[in-house]
Image 1 (cartoon, rainbow, N blue to C red):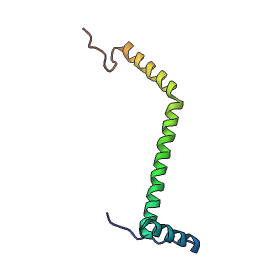
Image 2: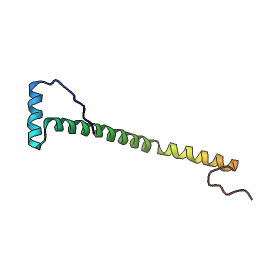
Image 3: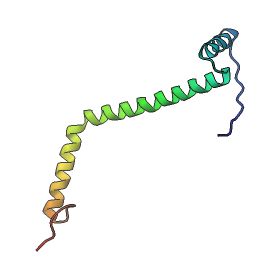
Image 4: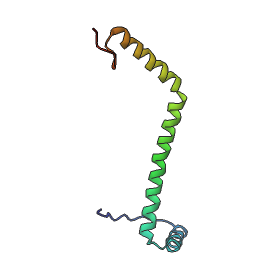
Length: 87
């Protein structure tokens, strides 16, 4: 994958902490920062999925009622998916 140069300005304490943590992990500061950003992006994605799952759980009964009602309407009309063909 092609790399893009990104320049950032941080205070000396933050820069020193990044150097120390990268050294402790045995990676370059660039790699350390890249891993932090990737981890943060993954956490955001997980948070979204978790929130969506919570939403679905909260409204599961509403969804079930709507799907049951829609299925009944299709069966009444004789055009429901999975309905046996008319003889």
